[in-house]
Length: 410
View 1 (cartoon, rainbow, N blue to C red):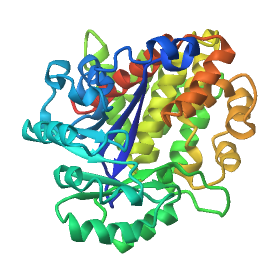
View 2: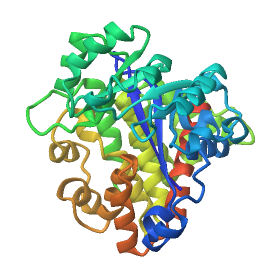
View 3: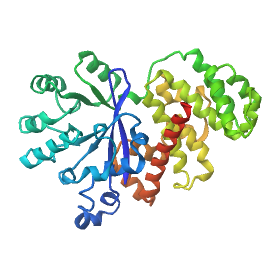
């Protein structure tokens, strides 16, 4: 199973829902199976299977989750496949589900059971034919790349006043700001929140300068624990977080000084904690999904280390994932951003030049998180890798992130 989560934002850049996109590996990794086994598992809603296995909180915390259904799986016993609250799940319907009476009746039945319905990938010519399904739907996705989205907004607002409009295919922050200013959309989807800065100059906030100094200190191969501890002491949030974590880890709690806490962790664990905690603090003025993306990439890359035969470079892979959106955070081109945190070697080569030993891991992660399954399949085939360990690495990174966020609330 291949799995990716795509965030949906409100106008304040807060994540309100996730779409889960999944694909059975045999559709891609063994083309010979297409003719004989293409309907294997067709009656299973793959997203529900993943929700049951992972838990809805792991995938989407307390938010709604959009799950695609096919023209076959829509008739399956969805309640037996997943016991998550019905109101948290919105079934995604596209133009492969025809607007015939048996489908309309089934969708009405799902609606009556408390599930929500969402429609996407409709061409303008399909709008009239799908009016019965649209009347049942809670959401309609309008693709900014493919249709005159503002005209479609007027159409749906008049004919279906109760439907929530989702603006999709948003590639830049300029597009997002323009759509937000015109108003009328409840959700926004696209790559706009992680578009890198390629030009311009921005001053880095004083607090971030302190964080950058700390990152530079701990990413020096021979850094001193006391030097790192002294820099941590300048930031109240980091100090509290460090002391709380170390006190939970020790048998005899009561550590009260930053230097003592740093010594208890040791150089390697302190470096890892600082890289994670500092980046989390640095990203606090950005959409929460950017922080999530950075941390998930870091752990995903680390979990992929043995898959790529790079066990000895797991720390570098973690750092590569963590800093892969540093240009977004510091609002500077990636090359300038990496110079500020003094990242060199393979990490720098992967993030700037798109080459080197680590880049294949970064490339696979980026294709994976975009649910670009044909390209993921091609990369796995070329590398002679199985999908299982890659998928397990991704799911383990989701679990790790859930546990990390849960610990923060203690």
